[in-house]
Length: 352
Image 1: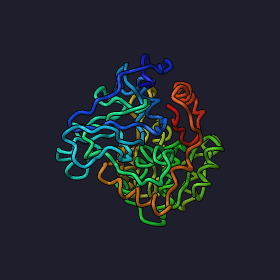
Image 2: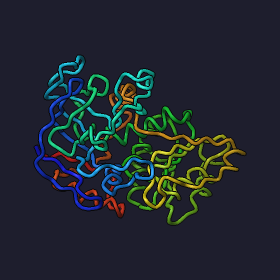
Image 3: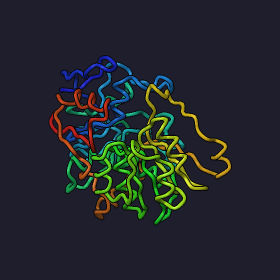
Image 4: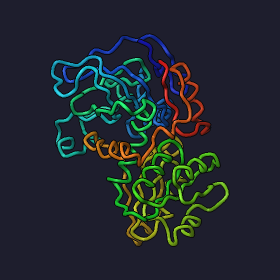
């Protein structure tokens, strides 16, 4: 089969023939219909994460936002069947540890990162292997487009978990979203569906316009205005919840600084080699104002039904975020475009 393989950090991925996967006893092979191109793929391509012992090894097939059909199952698989249409989470739990059994499979100590771990080759390929399929496979309705599900696969569910499970807003609260790329725009859509009022922050007018289309009540151009001060004025005292969807030191600090007393910051974006996993924060103010700082990673597979319910009701529309369909050969160039933030919305591989 054909796949896009990481050979050298920062050098174009190589599209080449590789062996097709065979299912492990607990696994399934999925023929890929669509796979999103995510900024996390860019981080992996650039070799980021060594400061957290999390750098992706050379030789990895990237791609972690797939949807497709099961074409083969291991002999220990009981729930999943050949022909099932499924989405694959990028944070794969083993289904047996205490975290998985208590609904926290996204932080499973024995888990694998799809497209990031040598034992979990990714989905920039014609086929992808899904480990522990009975636990991780998310059954999908037939009437949902592959593009919509690919957009849902990482960024949407990450945004949903951050807002619905890690933070605790109530309808009518103000939510600030810093960075309106794929996960940030997903957060705008999810927050609007949850009855929250959104202030979207970015440096690109096109991204802010798309955020307004998705329901943002107000926008802030960080190139033109002081972000915390402007958000405080717009929200009459600061956001109740704020997400850093980008992972830069500036966006993280702005997110914390724009909160009202007892507000909650959620860290979704991962840092670059400039921050190397470390950002200084106003800890005295965080203590005095009783601010909360939450980390957020993906979403437990066992809670996908909540997000699929919003999708079925028409409350969220991940397909509207898809800005471009690309072929497997175009993936190297689309990753490179992310270096200068030259992509908008969600780009999806649909031709393998």
